[in-house]
Length: 425
Image (cartoon, one colour):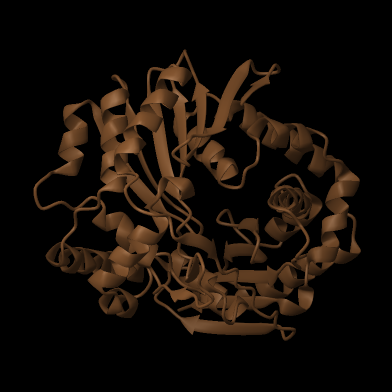
């Protein structure tokens, strides 16, 4: 299926190939680089999965998706990054809450690295010895987090904000979960998730869409010798605490850090499209309250209860939703009271409509600029394709959003779930 955005003269080809993979191609004839991403719906939130015909879930340890990401670069006979480098490409990967993605960039011909990427993902060659070596590397990475206080306070907040949801856990898991993961469990998870019918591939760059489609289909045909047993992933939604809580943790920080979070109400009947739009609406709502042009932000800065490190964001997904504010402050107690009052004002005071319009123009501007940023564009197309959302249709809906649409999101903010964490020396 070919879609066209006349406003930007952009084309997007999207299809499900006979091998089962969902493929999206955005030709960019003026680009010198091409990026190709190949993703599976296996992220850190995937802790329970069902096989076809089974009523009992498979329990997946924390950090397993990230562990597998590391191991797919392991081979007893091949130097995988070197193979890509020899054909003029740089390969890498990342794991998020909802997926694992493998990708490469190149300024040369894409066909050979494309074949290598599919081969790498479809023929895992790691051994039990390689697994143990990689486990040690992952554990070393975790120890490095000891110096990353922003990451620590974020994880601490999520553990207090959620009681049983897997978002409480770090994407890499824990040292204990990594050490407890067996070779057989990793292979079982690999065979369950890594099948073309579960995958999404995104191609952005100076390519011929027809040629790429034919090459993807013919290359995957070599690896269709196993059955796809994957049925679905369990969606875990935990209860929302109605008791605000505040926690102070002693840390060796130069300036105390304060992070606050509030749960957002989820509605079971909403589609992935509606949730994606809600995420944008909530961002607009927060920008009307905490945006740098708004009265509340200026007042908080004037009173020195926040500083330039101040930040805010929201996440609105199928199984979880929250908004978070963060600042460094020499007056944590005063800052906490001021921010709680500001959060309460979201529910009782109309946010600045002018600020909403400014935020909307800014987001639309960022959307337009994204078409000239190859990695950002590939990431965005992939995120939407994983949810079967058209990038162009989403932009049309974004452009049509009104101030009243944003105001309705205030009802989803559950103030009585508020949690604060202070890192203080």
